[in-house]
Amino acid sequence: MTVLLPGFLDAHAHLALIDPTQLAAGGIARVLDLGGWWPAADAPGGVAAAAALGVAGTDAVPSAAGAADAAGPDARYAGQFLGAPGGYPSRQAWAPAGSACAVGSPGEAAGAVARQAAGGASVIKVTLNSAAGPVLDTATLAAIVAAAHERMLPVAAHTEGPGQADAAFTAGVDLLAHTPFTDRLPGELLGRMAGRLTWISTLDIHGWGEPTAAFHVASDNLARFHTAGGRVLYGTDLGNGPLPVGLNRREIAALLACGLSPDDVLAALTADYPGYPNGPIPAAVSPARPSASTPALALAPALAPGVSPAGARRVTVIPGDRPTDPHDLTGFIDWLLRAQALPAHALPAHAQPARALPRPDLEDHRS
Image 1 (tube, rainbow, N blue to C red):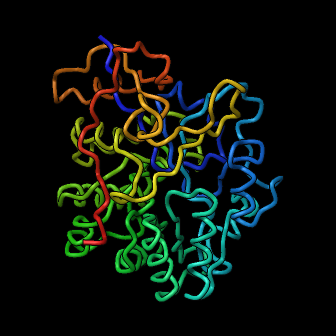
Image 2 (cartoon, rainbow, N blue to C red; image 1 turned 60 degrees about the vertical axis):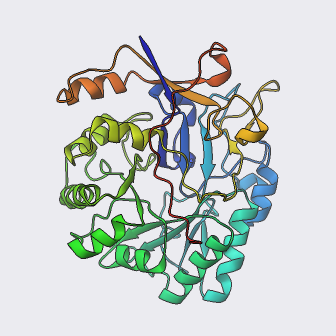
């Protein structure tokens, strides 16, 4: 038997730092790029995105070099990292040129958000990393969140350093780009976060198979967050160190060790892109260079009959039966890692993606 599922999502990737054409063979159909990537100048929408973000077209991160067809995953993206002047990651060697946008005051917030929106961003990314430099002050962070929410765009925050996860939550961000790993969160704060925030897992970056102290802190926080009812998305921070380009066995095992069930893991993988109900639905672009016959944009469902509810062009196919023993977690992981992402148009007409498991929609902040 072959199991057909909505395209698996890696909710934290950096396409500028990897070859995205390898993701489909590894089971990943969709990615959310959380900073540093936008469509290349030679891709549909690329020139407009580069102009909106204030970078030269030649500086736009290229599509997968030499790809002859749309072999990459469907992608949505944040555009630039919004942070304090001189803050993370503006001084990091790995950050592509033009990928950081300094926001020095509340008055600059709306313009910074508007540029990302004009460039096609479906989420706004802010950085609060006090371990690497200055961070956004309270008023400026609040102004960014307000400007994003006015446009119905969710806000994801990189938090690192004492108190930064709390600061992000207090400011009203919607997602934490990483499970908090600096310190153990107080139970009262964690419980309040579980009622509103979505966390993206990214556990394996802490040691890449050789767990560090930060891995144990993050795992403890995530286990308690999950127990409290918090929403978790599968994400790896792909591009950060020696991570597999595709499904990550260690990330999945860590999630299961934190108390997520196999069904919870599948829900975290098949969730829709983060977004507000009735918010904008930007077209998902392929980071691979398209052929003349393959459209680079996956339109919203109402405009493209037959694509998945997330607007994706790819679905995930897993050969073989899922293990029936709920305690056979190794067998479940082995089965999951057989997954491949295939173009939806290549499936027989009668084959329809399985209905998505309950997805962690963001709270509608208008209520």
